[in-house]
Length: 191
Length: 86
Image 1 (cartoon, each protein chain N blue to C red):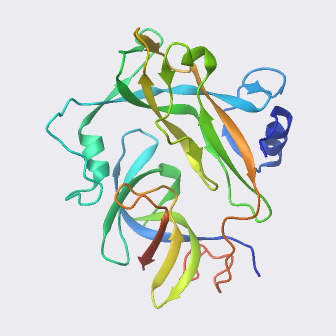
Image 2: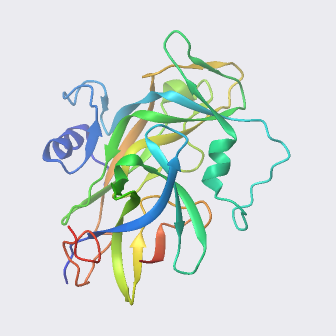
């Protein structure tokens, strides 16, 4: 079931989920919508380098794919004075300014989906490429796959409102363990 | 049944990721396959020069083998479920 704005705030105050920083604690004001919370763009954009001879082979990669992605893209710091100008049909990666956390709880777990904003969508701006799910236990800023499907250039500025997070309670726990190491953080017994 | 979920620390190799908040993680699975993924830096514990990844322990498989839930999906296997040998 999707959490309402009031319930999202209640879960944050209980520590069941975390969104940091949270700009406002009135559920009837931004960043809250009636059934989501708005997130903002961070100040680093990752732009893929033009490497037309490379083919992605997920099944038989000879080197770690993370190395390929890191080595074949450029990191760009954006500011309000120097936003990134996203051309039509171009993909860049960004991250949310906010860190989110769906911690390990023993009674209830949460997951979420990132969705775009209608005010951005009308310009053709999308914020994920078929990967909107934020699974239970996730922790960190959310990575956005930002594409301009419109006809006009779009400026990407730090802290612009770029997406919304829709949070849901998971029915049942994802994992029920029966092992002998309950409460330990490594199998040798170290806490 | 005990419903508590437990964490496990897995030795990994890390490099800087695509964003300042993340590491690129390289991990060898129990079947010998090498996988890579990006994780938030707060999920890596540094200890005596080693990097340890916080993951969810799913099941002890016997010996030194553990079934775990990784915090992110590796590019090479596209699943967070993994078996590791410690």
